[in-house]
Structures are given as C-alpha cells and as structure tokens.
Length: 475
Image (cartoon, rainbow, N blue to C red; front, side):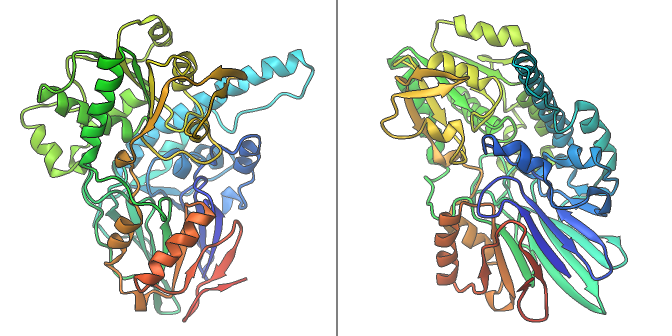
C-alpha cells in the first residue's frame, strides 16, 4: 500500500494524508484547509492533489478547520464516500463547516464588489453553506475504543487524544495478502492535564506512525498555571488600568476552556465584578455541543456539573450573536473581557475588536493558542512592534500584547513523547512527522531519537511512500 502526504507537511495547516491499498481502496485521513498563507491560501485549498470522486473513506481526527475545512469542497467536487468520525466531531462539524462557508461567501462578496468597481475578474467561494449542510449526510460515527470494520479488510478504532472535544487518534488495521499492517495517525495531541478533556489515551502497537509536531521544540507552562496567569492579566488590565482585555480564541475548545476557568474563579469569588462578552455565534453553538456531549469531558468537569449545570457561564457572562450588538462593544467604556474568534486573528469579529482597541495603552490583547507564523496573531506578538496593518490600515500598537501558552491544546515535546511511550520504538518501521514547522520538526526528531525512536521521516508535500515489510520507500 501507499501513503501520500498532501498537506500539513513542514507546516501546520492543511492536514490531508491519502492511503491507497493494494485492493485500490482510497482512505483519506483528514481533509483540512490551509490557513494564514496570504494570497497563496485559496490556490492551495483548491489544488487538492487527488480526485474527490475516487475517495472511498474519509476519516476525521477532529473538527478543527485545518483538519476538516475542505470536506464541503470535496463534496462539491463529487465526493460521496463515507466520512468517519466520533459523534462529537460530527456535531461540531455541523456548525464549524457552515460557519466556514459563511465566512467564505461573505469574503467573496466583499471582494467581488471591489473587483467589479475596478473591472477585475470576480471570484467564487470554495463552497457554500448548502454544500456544508449536504456533506453532513455522509457522516458515520463511532466512539472511542470501539473497533469496527469499514470493509472486509480494513478495521478502524478511535482513541482519545485530549486535544479537543471528540478528537481521536485513528488506528487502522489493513489486511493485504493475508498480512495485517497497522497504521496509527495521532491527529493533534492534547495536554497531559487539560481543564476540560481526558488525558491522551494509549493506543495499540503500530507498524507505521503519523504524528503531529506543532510544539516539538517547546516546553509549555504547566496547565495549572493558566488560571493564575489569566487572573493576573484580568486584574492588571481591568482593575489596575481600567481597560479591556481582548482574547482572540478558537471558537471551539479554547473558548470553552477559558470560560470554564473564569467560571471557577467566579465561583471562588476571585474574579472582579466585570462583564465577560463572548462575541462569536460559532462559540455559542459549540458550547451547546460541549453541554450535549459531557461523556467526552473529564471527570473533574463532570463532578463540577453535579452542582453547576453550566460550567461555561455565570452571571457576568453575555453571549452575543447579533452583529449590531457586537459593534456596540466598541462604545462600551467600562473594563471588560471580550472573547472572540478567530484564534489566529485571520478572520471573524475579533479582528474588529483588536483594530478598535490595540492603540489604547490601557488595553491588553491576550493570545491563548498557536498562531501560524504568517498570521496576524503571530505578527502582533513580534517584539518592539509599533504599528500593525489591519483591514489595510496602519494602526499604532500601544496595548499590552501577552500570551499564555499554558492554555495550549497541543502538548509540548515532553508531553508528546510521554504519550508515544505506549509504543515499542523497535517495532515501529517508520514515524512520519507532520503538522509542524520544519525547524521545529528537526528539533523534535532529535528529541524522539534521544528517546529511542528511529527511522523518522519529515515528508514534503506530495511525497509518496510505499509501506513495505521493513521500512517505507519513497517513490
């Protein structure tokens, strides 16, 4: 059989890995969207590297757009195979893919108005909300630790990775010529001690391992520090400086985690009496999914829910769907916290909040997640930055720019290696490092080798390997 690497190679976004069996079955692991690549982004997303009509199965590790965002696009182009995921991933995709389509249609509409005025060629979105709704009919769900066969020769089992609600390591057993090859794809690996999610779960021994490397060169702050660091930032910004705390956040996962921590602080009477605005329709919908799928949350959260049935809300929280109410926050003069998407500042309402607040020294922009190097979220973290371009306007940077890595949904290199210790390194034929910047991957490869792992490959985009008796061979 063969495996082809079609995205998230030597970079973080656009996860797509295509397995082709000797029997001709084509299994796509994730179908993610490239993000934060500037003018290249649209072209990269349109050039898939495969014919969607030929894909038999698509297995989603989780619902984040860099792993699921092109599902409606391949549906639009004729994909009619089965989409296999956990039920939580399906529930989240139902909202996230429609939200992605809405953003694309809105961006395209704005672009076309300017293009018509300037007599330039108009554009079309990758897909529409209708495409996003229709592709949901292809989903088949399974839960963790339940092995099932998608045909006579291919078995699938999911194991929790603790990265986001429903996120799974995909474990494949593929039978060819009477011999079984075992492939594990970790997807994104969570922290060892998440506020909301279980610890990443061991998976059986594999022959070939495809694994992420986002923070392969970093050591995070301990998760338990996140609460204190957040509280310090709230007090410094909202009490001492009487300013606004703007938190760009992934609408799914990070937003709920921050709300959970704020809720804990509120219940412990530690949080100052200020308003908390959650300005993201997608975050509101996603929070409903979290409450509907409590079986995916960890024991601590479920215990909390015995006396607090909504751990993501409290008296000072206001959820905002309406655009006009979102705009009205610009006129809100009191200290407050605004949590809004997107986390990398590439789209969504948070760009407007940052544009309206970054020039004021009493305010703070708090980054709580990974930002790809080319994104606005990464640029505003550059040391000594005095001006930033947002919506084509140069804006003075006078607000404090801070980050809390302890909120990261990705494990650091020590946590990832601890997770992989469930494997016997001598029994793994190859490890393929994906979902990481190249220099980071080189360092992570060294850390893995120091831990006894061998035969580590960092594939380039469109690299294809034949999986053989011994090691994989590039063709």
